[in-house]
Length: 400
Image (cartoon, one colour):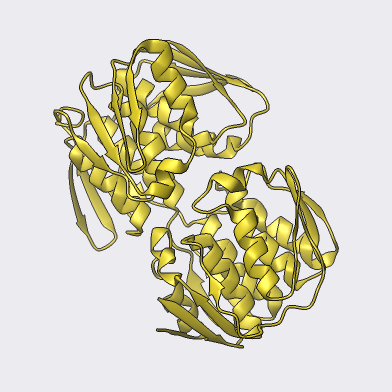
């Protein structure tokens, strides 16, 4: 699918879509509780549908009506040799592998070829150390193990999804455990989200110090509530305001623990100068920060290594697409420099790289200069209503 843009300004009020990060965590927490839980404000992106499918495959009973999901999980983790369909969701795959290792029987986790190319070495090493099965090919990983409560060490410079996945498993095992994180500790904010969500279900889990997480045996309880708005996707909507639009975004918790809240501060710095910004704790903001910097005065971004292991190699993807518009990024070992140059659409169609955040970032640029981008169906991964929302706000865009 292709999006064709004409220059336009956006105006109006819009509700930020629900947080995908929080929805993953609350859905899994609800299943772990073993109680009936009602979660509202759920957006059925491809990633969230993947997690719902995996919970069902493990025995949870899940019903959905409009934006509300009811989770009843008395049979959760009782399925025999289940097959989990992770689609293209890195969160789903990394969250569910440790749970699969608690089952004592073989579990197959399927996914796209690109998903299985993304790093899983932390779990492979864990399985090797404990004599568990870990077989990976281009479309699936098969595991079998009998994970136990205890003390674990994980590197802090890897994706926080590995740490969160292990936390879910240790909560399920329900004995005292400890996770020690080897510094440097990146994406700490995502671990805070995990702890916050699990505490809603009564989990006794705390940071003992800066690098140690204590997980205590505890009785989980039912929780019902609404998923808060997503700062990650709100960043794309707010970016329009920095190029002349007037969009008011509601449904954002000002006290949220989401690390991507920092986008507003970073946008301001980009608008006022040529800042150096560390994105090691907010890698999902990389593409829209690069896009806005290219439209303003340029910027230097550090902590960019983890962009290579996302849905696309996001640094390279933004290099490829911005170059078509006249801006050539400088990609270094763990930094990316965005220079100040004039953006122009010269007729070359942009490529989405099958990455939702590339689509939305380039859409902000094309709303200003006009142009076309192919592969925009990738937004279904996290924000399926993106184009409908910006059209309602006045964006001149046609999907063909």
